[in-house]
Length: 207
Image (cartoon, rainbow, N blue to C red; front, side, top):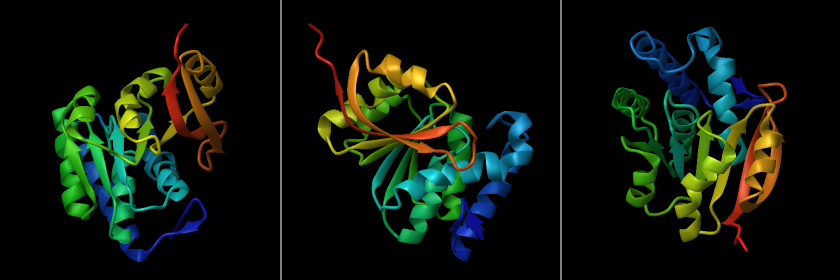
């Protein structure tokens, strides 16, 4: 099996297929993604999420903000299982979705923990992370505010964010309050979309 042109091991493929089956089962009773995108689960969501790990295939500690239906957090946790290292902290305040995420981690033998709390609380509960991921949660300025406590503890933290075609407006707006280094990775899956890799984030000192 290949995802985004990269070969995936049989074990990881089986875990991803199990996750897809669990997702379809739970999506009948709780709203995990827009119903119109369910038929494109593999290309629209799983392959799209896999890009995050493929950009940073390293056994590190992640914080996945607003994990929802498990994209990209569960997918990253499944890939980490093959590495035998690293860990994903999936942060989701909705308790039904948190129960779904816990089921996926357990049955897929993925490397992660679910935190059923708000992101602001999670930054206090989780001392330090190496990387942060997020998909379809908020604009950059807000995401940077969420992530700032972790960056203040480790300047080496990096962030990987899925963004659509309007991302440049968000980047320009965020530069009004923040300084940061940015690498734009064109999405392999979604035309006109990108994954923004953010490093060296710091809040601007206002005069």
